[in-house]
Image (cartoon, rainbow, N blue to C red; front, side):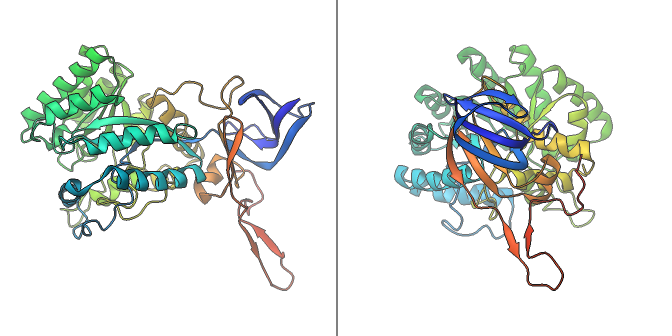
Length: 431
């Protein structure tokens, strides 16, 4: 007897018509035609059943603050940072938690159950840190939340930035962050990378650094980050987020850089929606769009994970909490339109992101927690094309969100009365 059997599921690896047996909050069986009874039967009707989506790069303290205190008129990264600096002194713990909880509700409805968020430590009052630590506890039953100590105004550049980051880590923040390209000089940025990696090594913590989020091809802090990763024995525990300067670097330098990143086992975290919105603002034409070299990084064996970064905040007025929207944009801007390309991009918002966060027990395997999403699409390729409805979201074997399938009624002579948006209209499997 199972608690739940999900029947007729298509899995991300291409297996079709599979049953998943769930008991005690775990996946205990994955096979065709599971010969057993269950308290509840969920018929997936040959839809995709996926592990939950993972966002490895977000700013929960800023989310849903769009328009406070005003709008970003230029649309630039620097005006966004300035706006956040205006808003920060007015922040209260209560307002931060209220906005973040509203976003987490949205995330759950989208099947997003794991998030790493950067928490600004530039204000010595650390109201943001207090709020996000409380939020982490509140949402723990349904979202795994990792917190990064992030010196938005610069580790050295911000007044008391060094002490504030150390205090945030002492308060229980999980990951060491940084923003070397925002220090006053390139040398200061490199010095911050060295110091922050040393702190992470001493405390036994991972590193996730905003790195080279600029169009400047001479912003090369990822090189220092990779070298310090090796020096401190942090391989596999370090992420370089954004990496947009790689879009502008010459090919010869990149041919040296990518093997260094691979040696250091750096996790690369591009943010397709934000990167193409904020970068290239000083260009006329040709106009750079700023996303890093996704295909080349993947081909070098580097773990690439995509983040959402922002939703309705000073930097980005759009966003929906839907990691498939992130992947959908990546297909276009990375020009990865082949079937194998799309399967790789789906991995970038699921298994690769889980690896970047060091998640244990993630994925559709027996013995793992029954955390999964049923989508109104047949496979991962169709999921990226359609950004489909999440029919059900399960956390540890319990349905925590449901959405009715999207169906359209037609009144056309000789045509079907109803269209299911999740059915491939060609009638052929995508792969």
